[in-house]
Picture 1 (tube, rainbow, N blue to C red):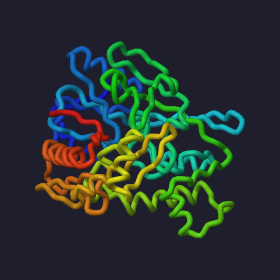
Picture 2 (picture 1 turned 120 degrees about the vertical axis):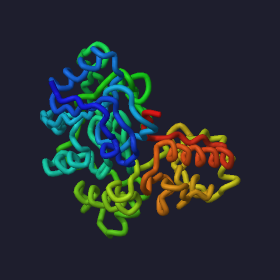
Picture 3 (picture 1 turned 90 degrees about the vertical axis):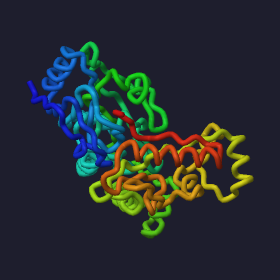
Length: 342
């Protein structure tokens, strides 16, 4: 039986350093410990809240039930011709495994370098950056049904992946705990530098197209992310706080007439993805401070906890930002991190 603690501060376990207390807390390192912890929760009719790296959550207040920190670690693989299917336990750190795969000569993850968090949360969020998202490489995942204790396998279709979205953020949020994920990587480099910001950074390095390696792509992605996003260990944050909204073609055309310099990324269906950071900056929120919380001075997409802020204060600022963007642009921003407590 794993150790189950009562009244545990969750401040060290979330990258926003928000104060919250878990009624019960348990860190599990094996599948057996996970099952035992779930049985403990079932026997007391407690809700179970899985926690990974804590880099994509907002704690709005204390948590009733059992907070389950998933520390299960393991990596295995099988070779299928030019592909390598790699299975990662949910507690493995995402960026560490990106680097591990590069060292092994398994390619495809390099555009997703330096994204914070663990493997399990990566699937929940369908993380993406610089022209790639997890769903592009996804094979399957294993999860436990918290209600029945059954082990289930989900293929790509069953996960209902969308833009920074999946079944596990919606209908399956309170039902499943991800145990591992399997991705299909390539033994041959498949360079993707079509994303404008990434291509511009490559151009600055004056590297010829034939000389671009996956290792170089990873290095440059790390440089870009480090220059744009604050380090949570220095300034507590959860990375991008809002999703980049996707607007219909008619609305996009109207916005371009009013804001001809508005940046945007055309989608295959004619819709337009608009950078949320640009919208927020146009509303004058870049660098705004509200007591101990604020909008980052260099990246308006990032909300920060400068010290001692609460989840309620942070979410209050987020709603202020959302209201301003809605009033000016008619666009409803969606909060990207998952919200618990309160």
